[in-house]
Image (tube, one colour):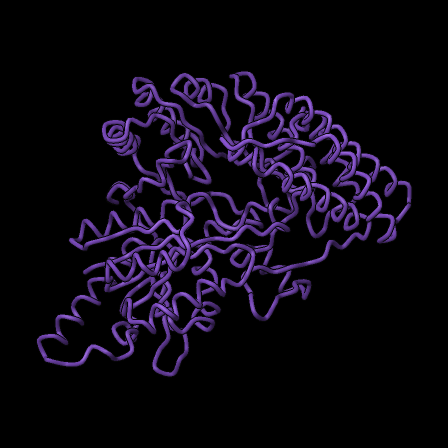
Length: 523
């Protein structure tokens, strides 16, 4: 079978530039793993990097027309809107008979399969959860059906979804004869070492680091996260062996001479002592390979000795999910961590020369001014507001409510979730405390201005101008002061009118804009 896998174009939503949770980083490897599995089964596979290569849909159509795939698979990523452009493209591809079968996979379709199948009739099925085995079985079923039809001399123009209407394929959601969605979830894979290494395109190697998957799932249960919902009810943290990871790294070094890596795992270490022992074994294997790498982890898994050994093996970057500086907020978020653990993790990492990247939720639906004050003082106390890009992130970041999370279900049950009938994947809810809500509005509009102004530099598209660091520090001070002054005024029982809030935003933007007057040159 000829199978084309598409990473579709994604638009930047200027109003959501500071929201980073629309899909986990681990989703960037889904297509590569599907391709590796399909190739191991003897299928001819082509990956089209519509996003990384910035292709238009016309260019993608030309690629499909040349390849003539039997199946078109799409890693469908939510980008803060109904993807009418993608749906229209798939309808057109079917109408032009560029392919006879379309399936989509990824985090967004796994959480909202019925919504997607109802919106786009060109999509024949949705793969739920881990896509590798389901896609391989779907391809085999499609090939068997095609062979049967050819031998019997039957027409091959019937509705493509009839190949799986019986519901025999685990992990596949599709319409039955009456148009109703039918599906059956697949159990998560037990042995991740059995997966073929992912196929990597040239576009992926243009990124600063090579992404690696060392584990899947998480032993946590944060209310804002849908990682485990993606893998299914029986999901748990599962890991590749250190030896299998080292083998893949060796193959990349040998073929591409790349030595900078980033583990996309949302939970690098895994639970307890077993997770620490595995990390130490991986460090032992990596130490002789002269590599650098980054990871993401829970704060309770940051242990002094393990970090020391990992740094010696090449660890240079780490993202830790702090989320809040108040224990009451951490309990609401079901982090199963404490403020003390947050601070201890920061201290350990800095002791070993690593300044952590942090995940933080300044504003929750149930945040009080007491929560916000505690968050701000925590960030200041731990020297986490000294860098403009970090400050702009954490002084606004709000809790995003996506389908598949505990927060989505809870707020929906309480009748507090606003759901757009045309798009039920993301739910919106207001912040209960009106003072917290107005502070969130001020910081959202101010930080969006900064992100849009600095996008070219922070993305690496433009060179950093001479003297930019000093200017960034000036702007950082203004941003912190805007937050602090607004918070103090609200704590003093003043509730701003819309006009007063807008005036605060305008003053902050004017000051920051004057500081960040920059002349850009392309890299």
